[in-house]
Image (tube, rainbow, N blue to C red; front, side):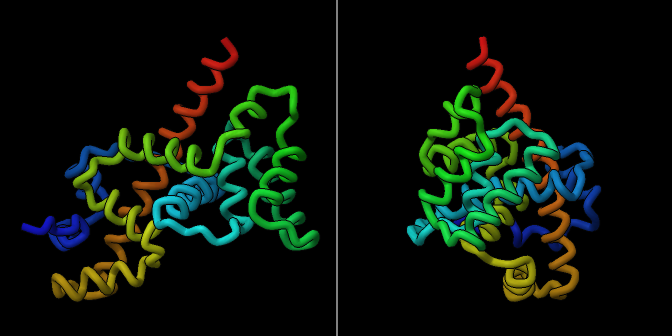
Amino acid sequence: MRRIDAIYHLPSITDESHLRRTWKYTKKTITKKQRAWVHYMLAVWGRVNRGDDSPAGAVNVIGRLMIRSQWSQDKSDQICRVVTTLHDEEGLRGEELYRRARDLVIPQSSISNIIALAKESDDAAFVERVLCKTINRDSPVRDVAIKQYCERKCPQDIARLINYHTGLDVQAARRRVVWCSNILDAEMFYALKREMENEFSQMAA
């Protein structure tokens, strides 16, 4: 029998707190910048897992560099600024864009530089590993992540799917998708940050 997508169980969820309790996600708070950082990370994961072999854009390169740099607001802003400049003003794309940006934002003498030599597929595998450890595979939160980043569906598209299969009003469905996204972002921010700190500390030992 075909597995029913987890998002189709969302109509039974009454609010975000109910969703957290059901799947045992504690309430976590992150800033707008931290949320953007997670989105860049997940964009790398989604691109590789959907089999996209088109030249990597600025968003993907930003994500790859953020995966390979310890979190800080200043570093995040620097990566965005450098990649956007190289992409928009110098017209760099793909691996050339990644290498040039990497050379500018990650000092060659740092531990980060060693990790930054990883392939894009390695970066995606890193995010996948953290996602699997953090988000229950049967959770609608994971289902939303897959649909949003791997299948490239926007929240409204996912809401329409829920509406089509369950009859739940589209706006009510969209609210539930947003709840899932909020939980995904917060859970993945802290999990990725913790995993990256572990990697850096092991390499420094």
